[in-house]
Image (cartoon, rainbow over all chains, first blue to last red; front, side, top):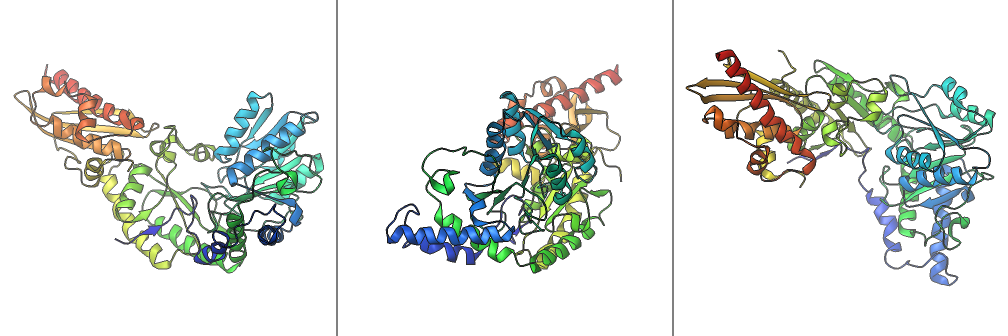
Amino acid sequence: MKKVYLDNGATTMLDPDVIKAMMPYFSVKYGNASSTHLFGEEAKEALERARSIIARSINARPEEIVFTSGGTESNNFALKSIAFTNKDKGNHIIISKVEHKCIMNACKWLEKQGFDITYLDVDKEGFVNPDELDKAITDKTILVSIIHGNNETGTINDLKTLGNICKKHKVYFHTDACQSYTKTELNVKKQNIDLITLNAHKIHGPKGIGALYIRKGVNIKPWQNGGAHEFDMRAGTENIHGIVGFAEAVKIAMNKKYIDYMANLRNKLIKGVLEIPEVILNGPTGNKRLCNNANFSFKGIEGEAIGGYLNNKGIASSTGSACSAKTLEPSYVLMAIGLSPEQANSSLRLTLSRFTTEEEIDYTLKVLPGIVTSLRKISPFWKE
Amino acid sequence: MYYSKKTLKRFKSPEFAGEIKNPDAVGQEGNPQCGDVMKIFLKVKDNIIKDIKFKTYGCIAAIASSDMMCELAKGKKLDDALKIKPKDIVNGLGKMPPIKFHCSILGTEALKKAIENYRRTKK
């Protein structure tokens, strides 16, 4: 059976060139970067080379990049450590209602530790309103964390405007850029960002490796204690093969031609799916949407069931429906952009990568209408 | 795998999916906000379920449970059909992730409503 992977928002295929770059660091170049012998030096060199590549990709300095185990750790590190390191200045943190689960749950934990969290609304396309952020900042605010590219709706927030507001109020600005990294501009100087969460496995790099950009001068202490790794900011022997793979993935993904390639395929997909009756696109259109993201709600049918039939045809997708969630609640992100629970339950997310082919999009567009029709036929909410 | 083979098979080709023209009774249970709604259509003769069909808005487990429930109910006396338990549906499907048990409850509740509606209109 044909296999089509349209769940690149969850994770991506490891690029064969990335595997190639990583291989020596599993076998012959296995040194610990903290060791002072030949083996250690080899690892240390690879570590610093990788750090430079990642720093350059966001216009930062190498010493501002701290490697972590991934997006979740970077987000937890940024939020919890900024909160505790700066609690003498205030106890107020601002995030949006459409942040990733790890930001949400880190904030719920921080609330229990005595911090006040403001959850900003978003508009019907998923954007944070800069004026609302401006008004929400108080003299107790120490940190603002707003997602860059949303994992469900594909919405790309205007970091520059949000960053300037934070700068004006002298409040730290963090963004979770796991979905957007290399897919749209990320420039710490231009966009006034103090902390950025980055990861590798959404851009054809390995799982289990990420980074936190920390602007020089930001008042933050390590969250994970131990040895003096990563400028004393994150203890633990560096995952050299992961770091090398991460940098290789960034190097390849920084080629802007891939953005246009994915955006064109995504546009074709969106256009084709919207030809099915009673379908809506969730999130914005054009270049304010992640180039690889499409998210729809199909009237009268449930998302997990659509995904189940797509799976039978070899197509991998995901949904924001309650049925697929372990909580049995429909996606809070889709509810935050104003969808009804029924519409959120009827959602389907298709996310592309640079390895997605036009033929795969054509195949998806060929089988999806039939699936929708057959599910609507057995739906109590669909009248022919 | 998350779902059993039997569940996936029923989901793929549900035998009892559809509608009965001029049914003797209809029963509906569930709420689209929670993600599942099941509608049951009955044909009854001499207190026996002669034909049964379903229309379901819901996930893989909801559609498979609806189909399983219809198979268990078809040919049964109304009183016996009322004795079908969610557990019977789960057993018929092999196994079910615990978080999806409510789908089987939805099945028996929808059937119960359909039978109640039938008895109400017959009186």
